[in-house]
Image (cartoon, rainbow, N blue to C red; front, side, top):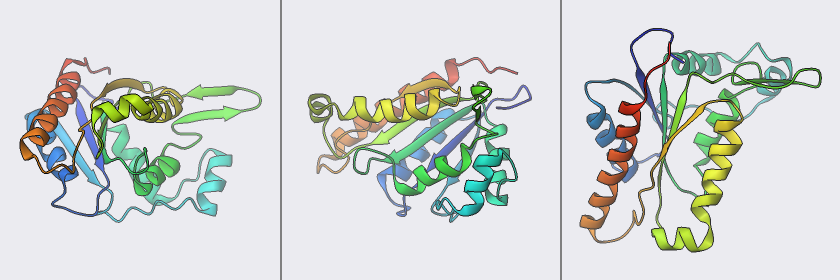
Length: 206
């Protein structure tokens, strides 16, 4: 939700292994976006606490008085025009640390406002959210069993739409654990091309 004319892309990831494919994809995307301004948030390296505490619960109901670490994330997101969630798929969803980041940061009073009197008022209209899931399964399995649709419904509709953020691109990297490095490289380059192209094509809003 940048308030100036300089578009900033915020890349969020959660993977404890710095040499993982997740981090390789993040680095490839950061390079592809150059010279556009990019900020990287590695939730594991930063030791972000994903636990939704009593303080978070009070902030949710009051719509304010957020914990300091949550406020820091709000300020970071407010500088961004685009958000990219880069994550390994665990049990057909994002890792617990990233889900906890969503739980605590995309909170009532900041990402949206809800009350019995006013109903739902989304507040992230100035942000475009992109998804880059890294999946162990192949694309055929995801299509046959509806895994991709389920994941996209959960995140795109359940989180992005709910908060009023614009939907950006979603690009999967499939077969991330296969022995063929050539296939993985092709899948990574395709995903990076889709996400970076969508970000570059999006006209920043003041």
